[in-house]
Length: 339
Image (cartoon, rainbow, N blue to C red; front, side, top):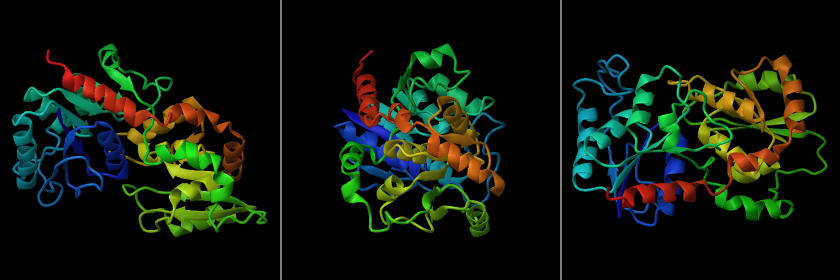
């Protein structure tokens, strides 16, 4: 069995999730991405040309696509590389996430798996990809569905729950939490700890904003983690935090769920409304506090109090720690079909 896997270049979530699923497939996986090959990738890797620099002309074709710029050599090269591999005989192609690659895969007659995003209700390109896909992987629980999905999409959807790089750590480390706290933990410190985790695809949170929040939340200490301020051990820091504050990207939500921490999730602007949709779903689900924009400093004391009082046991349903294996099983089942 030979499976292809396209990994989106935006943010850490796509690549972290792709690696977890690929390692569960137990076969050669041909990878595609603008990024360099991921450590531990189980197969060949195709480094794709960049198609976001230079002159960009009509990339969406009036809303038909997300990104297909006219006369762009980088775009032509990357799609050509994918086409050659598809023509060579892949048993299935997993796309996380590109409406254009999903369309190319299906046009070339290869069974196509779309790892879904919660799309904006008017996102024609994403909806077309849902129509084309043979299998949709929804990395959230079935109990937190996306409103408005057509019955045809639901019929071919496998709900896996969230998938994170920390899933294999959760059970073992949580049991030994008291033995593995980092030296930064101060049991006698009267301050509660708020950990802000900000993603690679989001603008850096201004220091002034964090100072404003800290000054309005007496009794709390604040720590910021981002690509510019990486954590030496994010897993332990999340376990040590009284509340985690994060954006509404799928990857960080999955990691917070794995750690089962009280959380405040703040949606950030995203190209296709994914973060706003994620925050709405979380608000309905009830595992954390979820809001649509960065709150005014005066609102933070109440938000922190609400977060810390919430029952975090429902995070175990959002991330069941077996999502990668469930996704891999569904992909293998599709790839093995001969008619």
